[in-house]
Length: 138
Image (cartoon, rainbow, N blue to C red; front, side, top):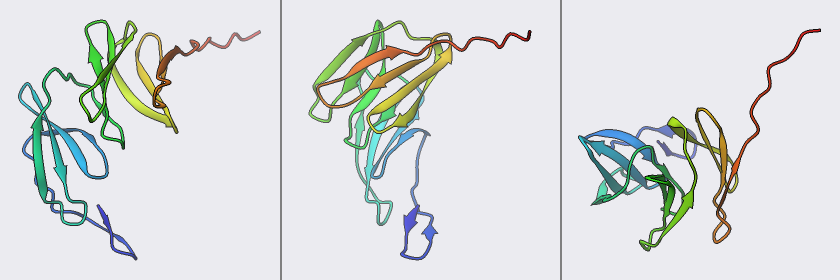
């Protein structure tokens, strides 16, 4: 979508695959078993570059900085645009999703424990959220 000054207008963005994540000028798409990052011009929707994401698994969360958050064998990875990668040890729930919680926070939600991931530069950390207790009627 593009803001024209008075309304939103759809962009002619042609995608060959399933969109997994999106930011203002980049999308992550899945083609078979491969994830691909495509940069595009927000004004026209023209694809300007494509990069195969080696070692990146779905689900993926794409930060506005261009950093990626994705699962690894023993936890999570945060891969920065310069290629450096931070590993965070955590046992993730099966079939989880990422969701923006607020500025600097991502929620990890699935069957089992929920987590909050702090994504502030050089202060990345994960916290287990308390489980909801059922109400007891008296």
